[in-house]
Length: 173
Image (tube, rainbow, N blue to C red; front, side, top):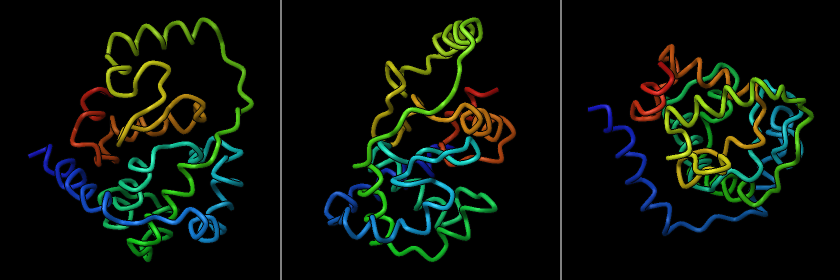
């Protein structure tokens, strides 16, 4: 049963493949999004994810999940509530075409090594790929704000985010 939401999302992607998304229209539609997600999807704070360079499919599934209530957030849910399918397609196309900019973050080498060991132990690169570049419905984590990543892991662990068919919920325990 836990795989059901993922199956529904994956099946909806077959319909997406036939749809035409318009990045130029998405750019115009993204103007209100810049307040949180920054210009061209490059947020300037760890409170909001960097959307630039995420895969089209990941972006579309997340917007659809917010739109349909499978994923909730007090700020994002109301923003996605009135998006049409065309809006979600156009926004996903636009953000997937943007180039992510480097963030200003100074990594602690010791913590990086502990994190690398833990990610290898829990097989994170199996889904997020080497370099954490993401694929299909799996997000790019490389270059994402650490605060945002930690919040998502906490949300999966506490089961306040469950739009992942249980995969991240199990891993985050």
